[in-house]
Picture 1 (cartoon, helix red, strand yellow):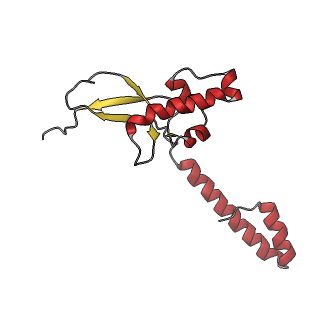
Picture 2: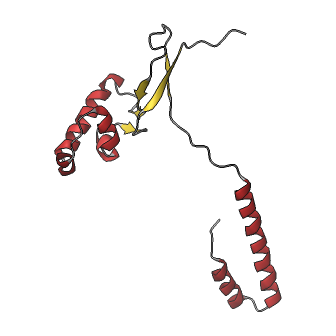
Length: 146
């Protein structure tokens, strides 16, 4: 529903309606509804900040108790996931060839994912979902027996 300023609504009502009592009743009802909406918004619990986590299935326990920094990326479904590093390197090269990249070149994969624009990644069909690294948690891919 479109939002309109109360003063503007009041002017429109005065132009189109001659009954002042009816206009005041409408405006009072609108103010009451706005007050109720404000109280409902204030009563809601605050938004919970969320973070990305990548979960790795580690059946052999090789990664147990390891802290890994990961990024969440997207590529086309038909692309080979093992080519992702080549695409990131190409994106870094394109960025470093640009005027901005010549002033502040990227030197690592992490810097590339944080600094290079989405436009350059999109040219190589890579979509970066997290610019900062997220924690990867390993699991044994088994549910506990009950």
